[in-house]
Length: 331
Image (cartoon, rainbow, N blue to C red):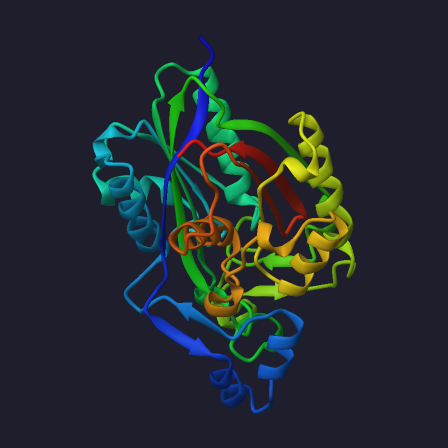
Protein backbone atom coordinates (compact mmCIF):
# COMPACT_ATOMS: atom_id res chain seq x y z
CA UNK A 1 0.00 0.00 0.00
CA UNK A 2 1.40 3.47 -0.87
CA UNK A 3 2.54 5.69 1.99
CA UNK A 4 1.99 9.44 1.95
CA UNK A 5 3.17 12.26 4.18
CA UNK A 6 0.30 14.16 5.77
CA UNK A 7 0.44 17.41 7.77
CA UNK A 8 -0.90 16.54 11.23
CA UNK A 9 -0.29 19.76 13.15
CA UNK A 10 1.53 23.08 13.24
CA UNK A 11 3.18 25.23 15.88
CA UNK A 12 5.14 28.46 16.11
CA UNK A 13 7.22 30.50 18.49
CA UNK A 14 7.55 34.28 18.44
CA UNK A 15 10.06 35.71 20.94
CA UNK A 16 8.70 38.14 23.49
CA UNK A 17 10.89 41.17 22.72
CA UNK A 18 9.28 43.39 20.07
CA UNK A 19 11.05 46.14 18.12
CA UNK A 20 8.74 48.59 16.29
CA UNK A 21 9.89 50.56 13.27
CA UNK A 22 10.21 53.62 15.51
CA UNK A 23 13.08 51.88 17.33
CA UNK A 24 15.11 51.93 14.12
CA UNK A 25 14.19 55.55 13.44
CA UNK A 26 16.00 56.32 16.67
CA UNK A 27 19.09 54.14 16.37
CA UNK A 28 19.64 54.93 12.68
CA UNK A 29 18.74 58.60 13.10
CA UNK A 30 16.52 58.53 10.03
CA UNK A 31 12.88 57.79 9.21
CA UNK A 32 12.74 54.18 8.03
CA UNK A 33 9.18 53.53 9.20
CA UNK A 34 7.42 54.97 6.17
CA UNK A 35 9.69 53.15 3.73
CA UNK A 36 9.29 49.80 5.52
CA UNK A 37 5.50 50.02 5.65
CA UNK A 38 5.07 51.18 2.07
CA UNK A 39 7.71 49.00 0.40
CA UNK A 40 7.71 45.70 2.31
CA UNK A 41 4.82 45.91 4.78
CA UNK A 42 6.86 45.52 7.97
CA UNK A 43 5.68 47.47 11.03
CA UNK A 44 7.38 45.54 13.85
CA UNK A 45 9.46 42.44 14.48
CA UNK A 46 10.45 40.20 17.41
CA UNK A 47 13.97 39.16 18.44
CA UNK A 48 15.45 36.60 20.80
CA UNK A 49 16.33 37.34 24.38
CA UNK A 50 20.01 37.32 25.33
CA UNK A 51 19.67 33.83 26.84
CA UNK A 52 17.84 32.33 23.84
CA UNK A 53 19.29 30.69 20.76
CA UNK A 54 17.98 29.08 17.58
CA UNK A 55 17.40 25.66 19.15
CA UNK A 56 15.25 27.33 21.83
CA UNK A 57 13.05 28.84 19.13
CA UNK A 58 12.76 25.36 17.60
CA UNK A 59 11.96 23.79 20.96
CA UNK A 60 8.99 26.03 21.73
CA UNK A 61 7.48 25.68 18.25
CA UNK A 62 8.01 21.91 18.32
CA UNK A 63 6.37 21.55 21.73
CA UNK A 64 3.27 23.31 20.46
CA UNK A 65 3.07 21.23 17.28
CA UNK A 66 3.55 17.97 19.21
CA UNK A 67 0.84 18.88 21.72
CA UNK A 68 -1.61 19.68 18.93
CA UNK A 69 -0.86 16.30 17.33
CA UNK A 70 -1.35 14.57 20.71
CA UNK A 71 2.17 13.15 20.42
CA UNK A 72 5.12 12.86 22.77
CA UNK A 73 8.70 13.65 21.73
CA UNK A 74 9.48 9.94 22.03
CA UNK A 75 6.95 9.25 19.25
CA UNK A 76 9.12 11.05 16.71
CA UNK A 77 11.16 9.02 14.22
CA UNK A 78 12.99 11.89 12.54
CA UNK A 79 13.69 15.58 13.22
CA UNK A 80 14.69 17.97 10.42
CA UNK A 81 15.66 21.53 11.23
CA UNK A 82 15.85 24.06 8.40
CA UNK A 83 17.96 27.05 9.38
CA UNK A 84 20.85 29.21 8.22
CA UNK A 85 21.38 30.56 11.74
CA UNK A 86 22.38 27.36 13.56
CA UNK A 87 23.46 27.17 17.16
CA UNK A 88 26.87 25.93 15.97
CA UNK A 89 28.68 25.16 12.73
CA UNK A 90 28.76 21.64 14.14
CA UNK A 91 26.89 19.74 15.55
CA UNK A 92 23.60 20.29 13.80
CA UNK A 93 20.83 22.24 15.51
CA UNK A 94 18.52 19.26 14.96
CA UNK A 95 20.70 17.22 17.32
CA UNK A 96 20.57 19.99 19.92
CA UNK A 97 16.79 20.10 19.56
CA UNK A 98 16.48 16.32 19.89
CA UNK A 99 18.28 16.48 23.20
CA UNK A 100 16.19 19.38 24.51
CA UNK A 101 12.95 17.61 23.53
CA UNK A 102 14.06 14.21 24.80
CA UNK A 103 13.13 12.72 21.42
CA UNK A 104 15.74 10.02 21.71
CA UNK A 105 14.18 7.63 19.18
CA UNK A 106 14.47 10.19 16.40
CA UNK A 107 17.23 10.54 13.84
CA UNK A 108 18.26 14.10 13.02
CA UNK A 109 19.68 16.28 10.29
CA UNK A 110 19.76 19.94 9.29
CA UNK A 111 18.85 21.53 5.95
CA UNK A 112 20.45 24.81 4.94
CA UNK A 113 19.37 26.38 1.68
CA UNK A 114 18.82 29.73 3.39
CA UNK A 115 15.22 30.90 3.45
CA UNK A 116 14.07 28.11 1.13
CA UNK A 117 15.09 25.60 3.81
CA UNK A 118 11.73 24.74 5.35
CA UNK A 119 9.98 24.18 2.03
CA UNK A 120 12.89 22.01 0.92
CA UNK A 121 12.86 20.09 4.21
CA UNK A 122 9.12 19.43 3.91
CA UNK A 123 9.54 17.78 0.53
CA UNK A 124 12.56 15.85 1.82
CA UNK A 125 10.58 14.57 4.81
CA UNK A 126 7.64 13.61 2.58
CA UNK A 127 9.87 11.52 0.36
CA UNK A 128 11.47 9.84 3.39
CA UNK A 129 8.04 8.89 4.70
CA UNK A 130 6.95 7.56 1.30
CA UNK A 131 9.93 5.24 1.02
CA UNK A 132 10.79 4.18 4.58
CA UNK A 133 8.37 2.06 6.62
CA UNK A 134 10.37 2.87 9.75
CA UNK A 135 9.18 6.48 9.69
CA UNK A 136 5.73 7.30 11.02
CA UNK A 137 6.16 10.75 12.57
CA UNK A 138 8.58 13.42 11.36
CA UNK A 139 9.07 16.87 12.89
CA UNK A 140 10.07 19.61 10.43
CA UNK A 141 11.08 22.94 11.95
CA UNK A 142 12.04 26.16 10.22
CA UNK A 143 13.98 28.52 12.48
CA UNK A 144 15.55 31.93 12.07
CA UNK A 145 17.74 33.64 14.64
CA UNK A 146 19.16 36.31 12.35
CA UNK A 147 19.21 39.01 15.04
CA UNK A 148 22.44 37.38 16.23
CA UNK A 149 24.06 38.18 12.89
CA UNK A 150 22.67 41.63 12.14
CA UNK A 151 24.78 44.78 12.03
CA UNK A 152 22.53 47.37 13.68
CA UNK A 153 24.20 50.17 11.74
CA UNK A 154 23.20 48.56 8.42
CA UNK A 155 19.68 49.73 7.64
CA UNK A 156 19.33 47.25 4.76
CA UNK A 157 19.46 44.22 7.07
CA UNK A 158 18.68 45.28 10.63
CA UNK A 159 15.27 46.73 9.76
CA UNK A 160 14.09 43.57 8.00
CA UNK A 161 15.41 40.59 9.96
CA UNK A 162 13.61 39.08 12.93
CA UNK A 163 13.60 35.82 14.89
CA UNK A 164 11.08 33.00 15.16
CA UNK A 165 10.31 29.36 14.45
CA UNK A 166 7.55 27.37 12.81
CA UNK A 167 7.04 23.63 13.16
CA UNK A 168 5.00 20.96 11.43
CA UNK A 169 4.46 17.34 12.44
CA UNK A 170 4.11 15.01 9.48
CA UNK A 171 2.59 11.56 9.74
CA UNK A 172 2.37 8.59 7.39
CA UNK A 173 -1.06 7.93 5.88
CA UNK A 174 -2.68 6.11 2.98
CA UNK A 175 -3.96 9.30 1.28
CA UNK A 176 -1.96 12.30 -0.02
CA UNK A 177 -0.68 14.53 1.76
CA UNK A 178 2.24 15.55 -0.23
CA UNK A 179 1.48 15.61 -3.95
CA UNK A 180 4.36 17.24 -5.83
CA UNK A 181 7.50 19.33 -5.41
CA UNK A 182 9.84 21.38 -7.60
CA UNK A 183 13.11 23.16 -6.93
CA UNK A 184 15.21 25.83 -8.65
CA UNK A 185 18.62 27.33 -7.94
CA UNK A 186 21.06 29.82 -9.43
CA UNK A 187 24.43 29.52 -7.73
CA UNK A 188 25.89 32.47 -9.62
CA UNK A 189 24.28 34.59 -6.89
CA UNK A 190 25.82 32.66 -4.00
CA UNK A 191 28.09 35.63 -3.29
CA UNK A 192 25.27 38.19 -3.18
CA UNK A 193 23.65 37.73 0.25
CA UNK A 194 24.78 35.64 3.18
CA UNK A 195 26.88 35.23 6.30
CA UNK A 196 30.32 34.93 4.77
CA UNK A 197 32.62 34.80 7.78
CA UNK A 198 33.01 32.06 10.34
CA UNK A 199 33.22 28.97 8.12
CA UNK A 200 35.89 27.25 6.01
CA UNK A 201 36.09 29.82 3.20
CA UNK A 202 36.63 32.71 5.60
CA UNK A 203 37.32 31.57 9.18
CA UNK A 204 36.69 34.14 11.86
CA UNK A 205 39.80 35.46 13.57
CA UNK A 206 40.27 38.27 16.10
CA UNK A 207 41.36 40.57 13.27
CA UNK A 208 38.64 39.50 10.81
CA UNK A 209 36.18 42.04 9.46
CA UNK A 210 33.34 43.13 11.73
CA UNK A 211 35.60 42.59 14.71
CA UNK A 212 35.54 38.85 14.15
CA UNK A 213 31.76 38.56 14.43
CA UNK A 214 29.96 36.93 11.47
CA UNK A 215 27.36 39.28 9.99
CA UNK A 216 24.66 38.92 7.36
CA UNK A 217 25.62 41.04 4.37
CA UNK A 218 24.08 42.27 1.13
CA UNK A 219 27.21 42.15 -1.03
CA UNK A 220 25.53 42.83 -4.38
CA UNK A 221 22.00 43.26 -5.60
CA UNK A 222 19.73 40.53 -6.86
CA UNK A 223 17.75 41.35 -10.01
CA UNK A 224 14.74 43.35 -8.82
CA UNK A 225 12.37 41.01 -10.64
CA UNK A 226 13.88 37.73 -9.44
CA UNK A 227 10.96 36.58 -7.28
CA UNK A 228 8.30 38.02 -9.55
CA UNK A 229 9.87 36.14 -12.45
CA UNK A 230 10.59 32.80 -10.80
CA UNK A 231 7.80 32.37 -8.23
CA UNK A 232 5.04 32.29 -10.88
CA UNK A 233 7.10 29.99 -13.10
CA UNK A 234 7.89 27.60 -10.25
CA UNK A 235 4.30 27.75 -8.98
CA UNK A 236 2.86 26.89 -12.38
CA UNK A 237 5.37 24.06 -12.82
CA UNK A 238 4.62 22.38 -9.50
CA UNK A 239 0.85 22.79 -9.92
CA UNK A 240 1.07 21.18 -13.35
CA UNK A 241 3.20 18.38 -11.91
CA UNK A 242 0.47 17.83 -9.30
CA UNK A 243 -2.10 17.44 -12.08
CA UNK A 244 -3.99 20.54 -10.94
CA UNK A 245 -4.74 24.07 -12.13
CA UNK A 246 -3.99 27.33 -10.35
CA UNK A 247 -7.68 27.67 -9.53
CA UNK A 248 -7.56 24.24 -7.84
CA UNK A 249 -5.13 25.61 -5.24
CA UNK A 250 -7.14 26.81 -2.25
CA UNK A 251 -4.32 28.36 -0.22
CA UNK A 252 -1.00 29.89 -1.30
CA UNK A 253 1.89 30.74 1.01
CA UNK A 254 5.04 32.54 -0.13
CA UNK A 255 8.23 33.71 1.54
CA UNK A 256 7.20 36.56 3.82
CA UNK A 257 9.72 39.25 2.95
CA UNK A 258 7.67 41.70 0.91
CA UNK A 259 3.90 42.14 1.00
CA UNK A 260 3.89 44.03 -2.30
CA UNK A 261 5.60 41.10 -4.00
CA UNK A 262 3.02 38.65 -2.65
CA UNK A 263 0.19 40.87 -3.86
CA UNK A 264 1.77 41.11 -7.31
CA UNK A 265 2.33 37.35 -7.50
CA UNK A 266 -1.29 36.64 -6.68
CA UNK A 267 -2.31 39.12 -9.38
CA UNK A 268 0.02 37.48 -11.93
CA UNK A 269 -1.49 34.09 -11.03
CA UNK A 270 -5.00 35.58 -11.33
CA UNK A 271 -5.81 34.48 -7.79
CA UNK A 272 -7.65 36.47 -5.09
CA UNK A 273 -5.75 37.74 -2.05
CA UNK A 274 -8.21 35.78 0.10
CA UNK A 275 -6.27 32.67 -0.90
CA UNK A 276 -3.08 33.79 0.83
CA UNK A 277 -1.88 35.11 4.18
CA UNK A 278 0.96 37.29 5.46
CA UNK A 279 2.68 37.96 8.77
CA UNK A 280 5.61 40.29 8.03
CA UNK A 281 3.63 43.28 9.29
CA UNK A 282 3.72 42.02 12.89
CA UNK A 283 6.68 39.60 12.96
CA UNK A 284 9.13 41.01 10.41
CA UNK A 285 11.10 38.72 8.14
CA UNK A 286 11.77 35.31 9.67
CA UNK A 287 13.52 33.48 6.84
CA UNK A 288 13.05 29.72 6.75
CA UNK A 289 10.54 30.03 9.61
CA UNK A 290 8.21 32.45 7.87
CA UNK A 291 6.02 30.06 5.85
CA UNK A 292 5.23 27.63 8.70
CA UNK A 293 4.65 30.61 11.00
CA UNK A 294 2.24 32.10 8.46
CA UNK A 295 0.51 28.74 8.08
CA UNK A 296 0.07 28.40 11.83
CA UNK A 297 -1.16 31.98 12.16
CA UNK A 298 -3.72 31.51 9.38
CA UNK A 299 -5.04 28.35 11.04
CA UNK A 300 -5.28 30.11 14.40
CA UNK A 301 -7.25 32.94 12.80
CA UNK A 302 -9.65 30.55 11.09
CA UNK A 303 -8.28 31.48 7.67
CA UNK A 304 -6.20 28.38 7.08
CA UNK A 305 -6.81 25.40 4.83
CA UNK A 306 -9.74 23.05 5.39
CA UNK A 307 -9.81 19.27 4.93
CA UNK A 308 -9.55 18.45 1.24
CA UNK A 309 -8.02 21.83 0.31
CA UNK A 310 -4.95 22.02 -1.89
CA UNK A 311 -2.11 24.08 -0.38
CA UNK A 312 0.95 25.46 -2.14
CA UNK A 313 4.19 26.55 -0.46
CA UNK A 314 6.73 28.58 -2.46
CA UNK A 315 9.96 29.79 -0.86
CA UNK A 316 13.15 31.50 -1.97
CA UNK A 317 16.43 32.19 -0.24
CA UNK A 318 20.02 33.21 -0.73
CA UNK A 319 22.12 31.08 -2.98
CA UNK A 320 19.81 31.54 -4.84
CA UNK A 321 17.63 28.56 -3.89
CA UNK A 322 13.89 28.09 -4.36
CA UNK A 323 11.44 25.32 -3.53
CA UNK A 324 7.73 24.81 -4.07
CA UNK A 325 5.37 21.99 -3.17
CA UNK A 326 1.68 21.12 -3.33
CA UNK A 327 -0.12 19.38 -0.48
CA UNK A 328 -3.64 18.14 0.15
CA UNK A 329 -4.82 19.22 3.59
CA UNK A 330 -5.91 16.18 5.57
CA UNK A 331 -6.17 17.75 9.03
